[in-house]
Length: 174
Image 1 (cartoon, rainbow, N blue to C red):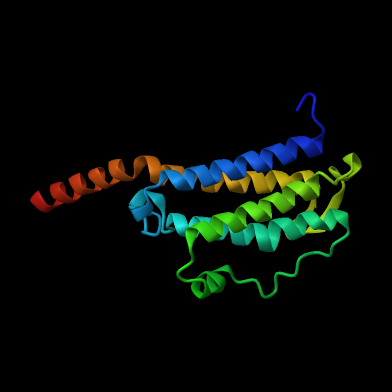
Image 2: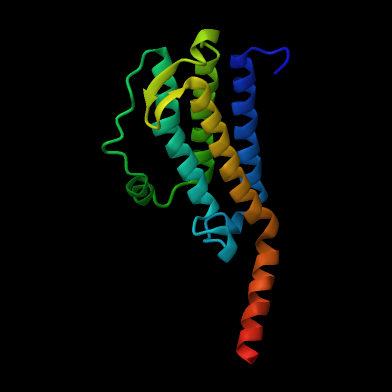
């Protein structure tokens, strides 16, 4: 961040991390994207990870960023991601990824409007009293977390399944 403003730095970070997440999703074979993964990778399919990240960014991250430009605290009283997921079945992956890109583009455009002095200003947000720097850093962290999850599925599914089958075979012969 030596020669960039804080806004430029975060804009680049959010854009690049979104593209990295999408790339990670695309590394998972198409036939596995809606399947529940093998044991070590949790209960969520890749499709569920995409839905979650989109829904979180649309309902929580973007509205929270807007607070520093005068918007009110997001009202999460009726927010229910599980209900939205159930209602969206079966969601189309290309549409979800396009919507995720669009929400992330809104975030990038928004933070490019932020004056340097606002980055450290504390406001009451859904996480308590935090700065805009914290909110955008949290958005980046959350993207990295789900990128890790989908890339783990992409890279290690076959290894985990083979290990699981060896353990089952050993248990059956004992």
